[in-house]
Structure formats: structure tokens, C-alpha cells
Amino acid sequence: MACEQWRNGLDAYVDGELDPAQAGALGRHLRECAACANDVLERVQMKRSVHAAGKRYAANAELRNRIQKTISAKPRREAGWLWKILAVPALSLLILSVAVGFYARHEADRRQRVYSELADLHVAALASSAQVDVVSTDRHTVKPWFQGKIPFTFNLPELQGSPFTLLGGRVTYLAQTPGAHLIYQVRKHEVSVFIFQDRGEETASLPSGPVHAQSFTVQNWTQNGLRYFVIGDAGAEDIEALRNLLQRAQ
Image (cartoon, rainbow, N blue to C red; front, side):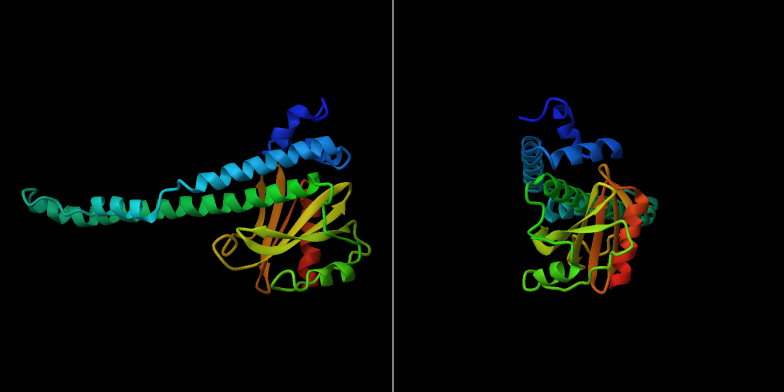
């Protein structure tokens, strides 16, 4: 059972509704309390199960085609010549508006799905008793560990003189695509770095730059055919600094 003082904050933490200070404090508590960490893991797993179940009932392409055919149906003959002249551009504009709106909503939903999935992976790792599978502060130990486990290679930055410490890494999956999950520490905050091949609908063409996902700051960019994500409740300047280190390392 969760500790009494944190019980009411667990759902808000998983849903990203805590402010950065509260999220950081609860995150530190989770690393010390196995009971609370287990409760958070259960909540994350339930959230991901509900999310996956919801996809089963998404409207399919067949329904969209039927609607478009209905909209595009020819007007009746008795409608007069003026209607015939105006109907074609009006229908074209309507179909274009529907298509643009559908695409915009689809892209927004896709971006939200990716960021939500990454936030869940980050929270689950922090709540786990074994955050990483390879435990090392040495980049020359962590990088070779991924060889043969993921279908790409990457470089890790030299951290000497920076406020960051590498804690280790693990293999993770985004939309069934394998990637690297690295965890860094900065000023008592844990920050996740996710690296995937930049291909497929889930990661390709995502806009680069900082965004806010739940209660976390996210930086993402593409480089050398890979998509990088840096996510955590550390300050935005620390997230950006780690991004810069990773970019220079490539």
C-alpha cells in the first residue's frame, strides 16, 4: 500500500498533472519506497492497457470512404443550372476541408500518443527497482552492451566537467520498435534518453524542438538516421544541455 502522504498524488503523477517540484519530490520518494513504486507501476500498466484497448475501436478507412462518397454524391437533376455551377467548387472545398482537418487531428493524436508513451516508459523505469539492465557510469561499458540487442549504433558523450552522470541503460520498445533507453542524473533528477531509428509512423516527421508532455519537458531531434528524445522533470536548461552534449557526440 502506498505511503499515506503520497497516496493521493500517485494518479496525478502517472497522468503528468503534478507541477515539476512535486513530480521531482515524488520521483525521489519512489526510488526509496518499494510499495509506492509498485503502485505506480500498476497504474502505468493499466493506463497502457486501456490505451491499447481504445485503439481497437478507432474509425477505419472504410468508414471515412463511405462518408466521402456521400459528400461527393452528384446533385439531383432538378436542382437547376446555377446549383450545378456552384456545387462542384463547393463540394471540392468541403472535401478539402474535411481532409485537412482529418490529417491535422491524426497528426496531433499521433504526436500525443508518442509523447504519452515515452512519459509512461520514463515513469515506469523510475518506479522500477531495476531502472537499467546495464549499470555503469562509463559510456565505454554502456554503449557496447547494446550491440546485437538493437539494430543500430550510437555514440555517448563525454560527461567530465558537466553536471550529468550516466546511470546505465536498457532496451525499450516504442510501437514494437526496439531502441535504447539511457538514464542520466542531474541535480537529483533522473532524465531519460530514448534513441530509435527514425522510420515508421510513430517517430518519423515529428517536429523537432522542446515540448511539454504531461509534467515533463521533452526535447527531440533527428541525427544520422536516428530519432532522439530527452525527457524528464529537470529544468528546461538541463534538458537542453543534455541534448547539446548528445548532438555533439554524434
